[in-house]
Amino acid sequence: MCGIVGYLGPLNPKDVIMQGLKKLEYRGYDSAGLAIIQDGHTKLIRAMGKLQALDDKIKNESWTGHIGIGHTRWATHGVPSERNAHPHKARGITLVHNGIIENYHEIKERLLAKGAHIASDTDSELVAHLIAEEYEKVKDLKSAVERVLPQLTGAFSIVVLCEQSPNELIAFKDGPPLVVGLGKGENFVASDVQALIKYTNEFIYLNDREIVKLEPSKVQLFSSHGVAIERKSVTLNWSAELTEKQGFAHFMLKEIHEQPRTVAAAVNSHLVENSVRLDRVGFNDQNYFENRETLDVEKDWQNTQKVLQGVERVFIIACGTSFYAGNVAKYFLEKIAKIPVEIDIASEFRYRDPVIPKNTLVMTISQSGETADTLAAIRLAKEKGALTLSLCNVKNSSIDRIADGHLYMNAGPEIGVASTKAFTATLAILNVFALGFGKIRKSLPVKEEQELVASLRALPSKMEVVLSYDKYFQAAAKTLKDFKGFLFMGRGTSYPIAMEGALKLKELAYFHAEGYAAGEMKHGPIALIDERMAIVMVAPRDHYFEKTVSNIEEVRARGGYIISLGSGDDQALKRISKQYLPIPVSDWMTNPILFVVPLQLMAYHLSSELGYDVDQPRNLAKSVTVE
Ligand code: M6R
Image 1 (cartoon, rainbow, N blue to C red):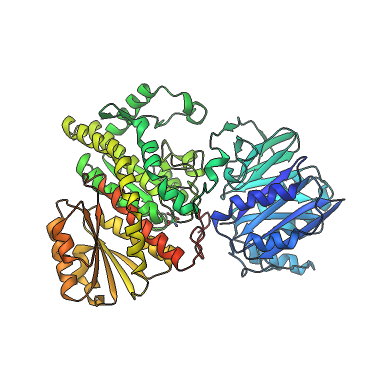
Image 2 (cartoon, protein in one colour; image 1 turned 60 degrees about the horizontal axis):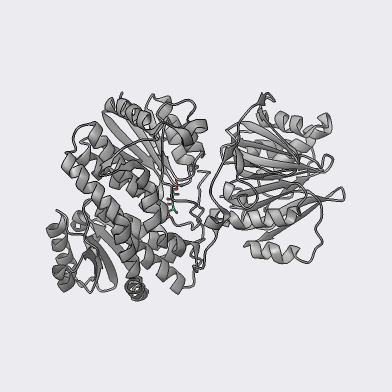
């Protein structure tokens, strides 16, 4: 989704903005622009396409000034074009915007009736006109923004620059994320801390319906009615280095290779010798965000046990890859914690008027913590009285801040739009969550807990082994180019892994691929099978194995091309598959983490072989902050 960067201070705003926007490229965009106040005038330049196109346009210009805003646009209202790119200017007011103004038709008619000259098809430009009107009346930028807010409906964030008042930026958030970066004699605002970690590690996160006024040496926070708000800043320890490619051809490849480390980081703090401690969850702790780093872990574990003892069922809600992780968790929780689990796509849950019985835990999964549908779903769950738990990667994100309890993937920044390391970190923490819950519900024998913890500890080195087979996955990917379509199949936890494999291939290589429960094959997809159809079977040696082998035989009989992934040197699978990819032997709960890695790598290689943009596949955005 759109990316915003604003800066005021002694550095050249053009450099800070362009570098910040570069870090936000992962969010997905189709055009970009920037505006800087220079010698009392707003210099505004925009370009269609990648940031390189904007860079080409601005590189021979002279850039001075000390205040500016920039934007990468992901089109919602109005086609991708230079005219619709941000920033938008109306008289002395220039703004960048992320989100949607729902009543824009009505505003546009009103403005046109008054003779306004509207230059774009966007909802964003209209807001600039409204602020310019109010500014002419009150001659104060914050008051002008405040007066416009009641006229707007929707979910949106804006950052506003004013020619007549060149020492301040005013930002407002209601929905899409905005964070303020604090510096010495300089301040920043952006959609994501990743744009700013090169300059500062001190941040203030804006909550919905808050206004911030930034000056070079001062930052003030207000409610949308202008009432001052006090908020402590948060120090983050993500280094700028973590957001670089570090020698890999793509962020995605780097992130795939980081997985042994990120999986370990996700679980290690919850493993105490050979047992699990589901701590640092902070259920119902009002001061959680201030005290998170210094929490008494033993006390918190006691609290988690007390809170979860009363839970009788679990709902898991998420979108995309996070939804598939939730599907795997259903198998974990039902078997280990013997608790009923329902799983839902957030965009369905939020509009369905779901029935949430008493004593339900609603768990959301979201890498970004900003996905609009998941955010709305957790809000709804809270309204309906559920206990909520967020599992996300980005600490302090909107979903994290709303939830009653908090778990983290701890995967570090994920830049590649296609999720990889966040998915495996999620599965790892879901292992821990199921084991912890099983202990609380006394459904997990100590011996089984010890074995599963040992297996979690062994997981990073097994992942290293999978990664070391990359040349085989690359070779397998090369053979896939000419098939007309792909069916990914598996049973049990391998079913959501098959869906995730198909999603990766769609997202990255733009092939039509479907993920299916292998047992469903006879109910329809079998009609697709012929020699031009490739079938990827996820077939670990678990208790579904024999059934999966029968499915492979059925595919073989119809001439389908079979690539199977199995546990170790599986002769039976080798015999019946065109290609066999061995995965180190593991237990049923860690298998999904190992088996997804080759699927990520095959999609990656196919995409780069075809010359596609691996890190920013077409039409996709990293964090889907609008519906
Ligand atoms: O940030 P979230 O985990 O909430 O994002 C959910 C989906 O948008 C995301 O997983 C999407 O499907 C990715 N493109 C998957 O690679």
